[in-house]
Structures are given as structure tokens and as C-alpha cells.
Image (tube, rainbow, N blue to C red; front, side, top):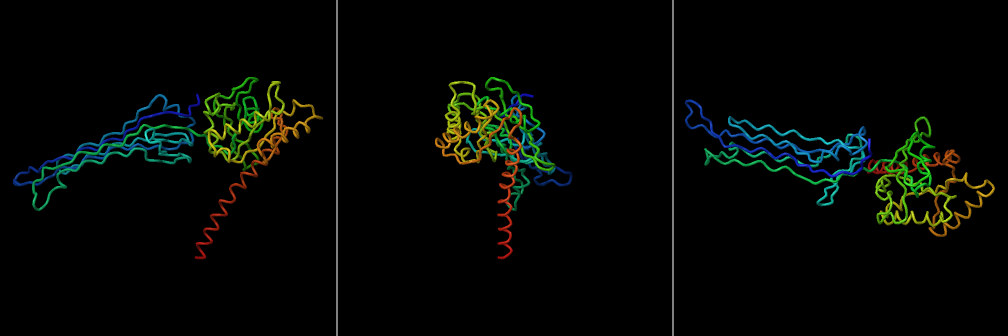
Length: 358
């Protein structure tokens, strides 16, 4: 199935049914009172996160969703039936935005999370509500309220612990193939990755993490060049970014330091928060450098790169095509992810302890 990560739809909740003004007409009761019932409420529109759905493709073909109108009230104190609700199932990770206001209406981050998007209109009141000691035969009734309506933007942001970042042909797809069961396309030309790929990395019997491979970035991406900028939103939920650098480019005009620095610049242009995420440097394609020259090549690159970017994070030299150096990398990632989860638990415990002391 084609990966679809964006869609626009229109939703309108059902209008409420109208109340009615009627009177009892029974034999031997010539002065029967009001008995007009209320209208039913309109059907609302909900969105629900479903982990069994991986794409927004259904919303590319069906773009209008209208809630059912409530039935009008009836005589003999009969209330109108309410309209049925609409439930739209979407992939986990979908962000629902009101296109007219820009407000985020739902961020579906967990399976079965349900959010009301458009509320159905209330039913109108029948004349039974207007009877009083001074108004024994009220002829008033009200119409049902209109249901809410929205033009919605749907945006799927994949949920992954680790995101792969780098130029086209830096080896991102090769790395995800080496460390997981994912099998993205790999070829010797740029932009072989046309949509995000997810891979589950098994570190132990009960330990694993998810890696997202997105299309490569090029300089000028933040201004619309290339493909990768469209998918940078998929890196916003990740906790660690792996910045892959081809340390032995075949193109004689390539400059690994300059290119790596340019990628960081594109991140900052697109979303400054991405630059603040933990970012690890992965020096790939060591197999293309003679073994006796590798240490010097790594040292020279790091010296120039750190001087240009002030980088002081972890560095992992690897050869993704044969898996060399990937085991220390995945163990370090697992350890880092576990440490990131510890402070949250500790903070919760501190709060509970403070509450008990109080």
C-alpha cells in the first residue's frame, strides 16, 4: 500500500432535530395540555487512534464526513431519536489540525485514544418545556442547533525512538537493514527512500527500540529542495537522532565536513527543537578506506567537524553494509533510551514522597 502521510478532509456533525408544539386531544379531556417532544441530538464526529492502520490513504479518496441529523420531536411526549456518531479510525501518530484556525484538535499518540472533533447539535425543545401557571397552552418550540463543522488537516508523524538523518546515499537504508528486519530499497543513486521506513531493533529477549529512516536531506531542503524536508516531521517524536555521514564519498567534489554541517543547518531552519534533540554522529562506509588509513581519516574529520559545529556528542564509526561497528551502537542506544526513562519515574516517586510527608 502506498504510504500517505497527509490528507485534508471536511467534517460536519449532525444538526439537532427540531422540537414540536402539539397538544393532547383525548376524549373527555377537552382542555388537553401541551405534549410536544424534544428533537434528538445530532451525531458527533470522533477520531480514534488504531495501531492496525499504517497510512492515511483512505482519507485521500473519501474527504467529506457528515454526521446524522437528529430526528424531530413528536406528539404524545415523544422525543426524537439522536443521530448516530461517526468514528474515524486513523494511524497512531496522526495530528489533526483545524485548517482555518491552525489549532491542533487531536494528537493521537496512543492506541484507542478517542477525541471528539465535531460536536453534534442539541435537539430543540418541545412545547412541554414552556408550560407554566400563566401559560397553559404554550405554542413555543425551538429548532435544533447546528452541528460543528471543520476543515481538517491530517498529518501522520511516525512514532519512533530513533531517527536516521543524513544526505541521500549516506547509508541510512543500509543501516536499518543491518540492525533490524526492515527491508527498505537500497541502490547506488540518491533518493531511493521515498517515504519513511520503520524498523524494530531487537537488543535482547525483552528489549527493543524503533528506528525511522526518512528520505535524505540536501542543502536548501528547508527552502523546498529535495524530498527529505517533507518528512522531517517524522523526526519530531524521536528521542535520539543518528546523523549518518559518508566519510569516504566517491564524488571527488564532496566535502563530508561541509555536507554534515549543512544538514544541521537545515534542521535549524525547519525546526529549532530538532537541533536540541540528542544527536549522535555515525561515520559510515569505513570499508571504502584502507584499514591503515581509517584512524587518521576519522581523526581528521572529527577535528574539522568539531571546530565547525562545536559538536561534543558520541561518535560511532561503522560499516553498515556488513554490520561492522553496529552492535556497540545499538547497545549504546538501548542504554541511552533506558536512562532517558529513569528521571521521569524518579520525579514521580519524589512527588509521591513529598505528598505523603505533607
